[in-house]
Length: 81
Figure 1 (spheres, helix red, strand yellow):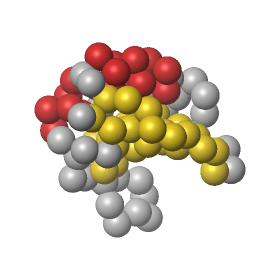
Figure 2: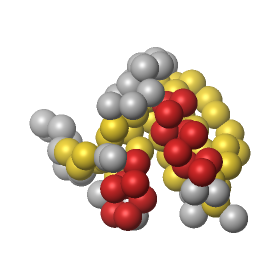
Figure 3: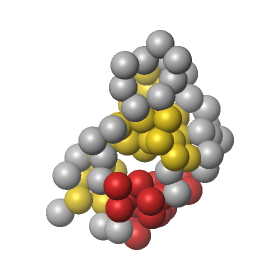
Figure 4: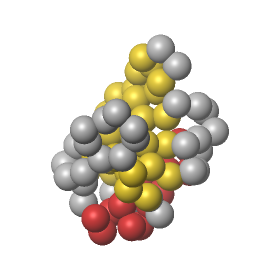
């Protein structure tokens, strides 16, 4: 079950899923579903910093597989066994 977390800043908000993400997991993270003007898709985000989100996901069994930066966006790829 790969999952991506995107962050536009080091302190938040943190993008945690898309419109097809597990609603239970999104609820656990405290995520809000939104549609940004001009986008044709929905996304989930939290106001928490990425480190808070990553700690919560680790408590659910997710592990970081890789991390990279794309411009000012940080992207983590996680996997759950």
